[in-house]
Image 1 (cartoon, chains in turn brown, orange):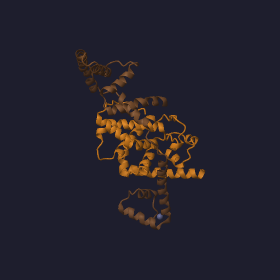
Image 2 (cartoon, chains in turn blue, cyan):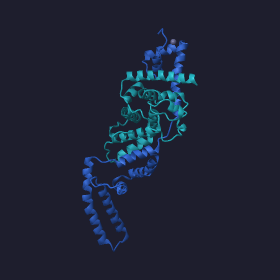
Image 3 (cartoon, rainbow over the protein chains, first blue to last red):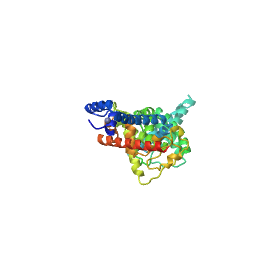
Image 4 (tube, protein in one colour):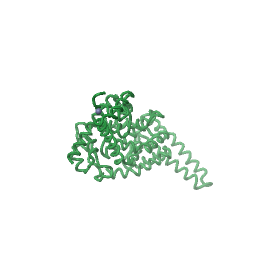
Length: 177
Length: 188
Ligand SMILES: [Zn+2]
């Protein structure tokens, strides 16, 4: 290697991307040639400067982004297959709710408060499932109810927590927009 | 960003956990990568959001034992390329939502923005200025090579191009960076 090293070669050397033989040749040349050594140091300092700038500008992950991700997932329309599955739910839920109300009626005098709560819970559950029915028209007034009830009915606790977080953040999103 | 919304299924508990962990562990790295790529917070937020939605949808295709970060960088890179294609020819820039970006090192808009914008925002860092003037591909290679410290092979996989392309892009990008920084230093 009689010529000076090209900057391409120096960059590949800096990044340790050269095959062992070439790497050794560059190493030897840098040991003996001041001009190339200086050139190499400029390349190395550019990398250092880039890293330093990146470190200085490092920012936290905005919680807003996570909130929007969960919001988008929550508001997504399920696929046709999931919609068909959802259609069946009210058909099952209705008799179940009716049976429960009837049960409460029978048991009523014995334990007044407990079962009543249970029944109303299941009735609300049914309403929630009905609201989830994708074929039901979603009026603007009903949208909030649909959104929250859908959350209550069939999401895991973990996700519901996330979703609540998302609901809370919606105000923030609106504020930003 | 303006991507058409495709269907998203309700999450299974495993899927929700996967996404939760992904955002907790890699949200910061992903967002910073997106921020350096786009140069502004608004685009970076949109890009990170779309990336995690894609992670959510494609979570089963992630191979355990492989680098999640490489995977999401690849997603971010693809989304950004698609977005630039969509915007191409429009040459319009979104107005930043806030005007106090100094603590974040200044707003670096998309590469199509005139240089005066940076000066107005008092961005004095010559290197950040220079970085913003690279093409998006050149900037991606510099970010992945010099800041994220990926090998040429890994960058080729992330960007979906050959090692030769990675190498020549990096060489050209660095040569350009050096010229721009030197010019800025002479002027000041
Ligand atoms: Zn030499």
